[in-house]
Amino acid sequence: VLVLGGIGTGAAAWASWSDAQRDIEEAREVSAVEQSIVDDAVAQVGEIAARIQTQSSAYHEAAALWSESEAAVAQWRAETVAPTPAVPNPGGEVLPGGNEAARALLDSIGASGVQLVFEAGEQNCGYHPAPAGSLALGGCYNSRFRTSLFLAWDAGVGRDAIWPAFVHEAMHWYQWEHYYTMFQAADRLGIGQDAYLPQLEADASCRAVVVHGVPRTAYAASSAPCDVDDWHENWFVEELAALGVPQAAPEVERYEVQAVTRP
Ligand SMILES: [Zn+2]
Image 1 (cartoon, rainbow, N blue to C red):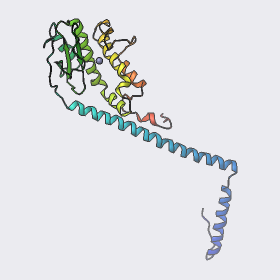
Image 2 (image 1 turned 90 degrees about the horizontal axis):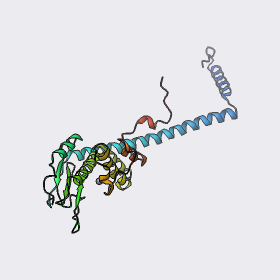
Image 3 (image 1 turned 45 degrees about the vertical axis):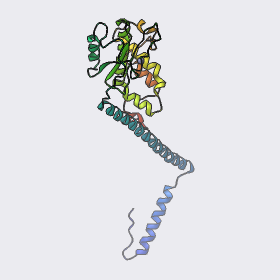
Image 4 (image 1 turned 60 degrees about the horizontal axis):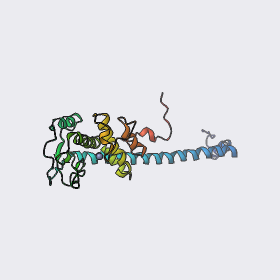
């Protein structure tokens, strides 16, 4: 606004400026209805700002959770804990029929660095000496020993029984190799392994059945039957997702408060 006063009449010029200012302010006056629309709009902007703040915090929290999980897995991959054999396998150092097929299966799933450890001590969490008159067989994959698969059986147990146990444990290795970041994320969310233990076991046996051709009946009487009719490649990941476990780093778009319109 430019108000010109007369030459040498500063007071008049000021008066004119004041009048003009008042005119403008009067022109700006709004009705109660208009004012409430303005107030609503201002409130809405405040609400959106608060939601943006909330979503932003949620995104950063989820991103930190995932990167911490990834860091834990990277650390795990960097270290190899060697088992300390304590009790020899009563069944010996060679699978009935030879170790070649087991080696080939491990190589085929990317487990070339994994060793079969024939061990009947407590590091083989799956083997427990059987009462007199019966035979024991048990294997274990313990992520603490990232590159070991434990297996033990009593003399007299045949390959038909040992092979399914071996493949089941190899599938546990596969789970940690592929899903460990999710397990770490679950743990950080307070979702312990107990929450998905039945799925973990079923997935190991079903992967052995569907992908590696182990007869389903081989696990029927075991502690880990393949009792999932519709098992498929992503089945276990879907089970984890249903429990609220993230599968990947969060996507920032999913935390946006307002959809972004792109041409
Ligand atoms: Zn198992």
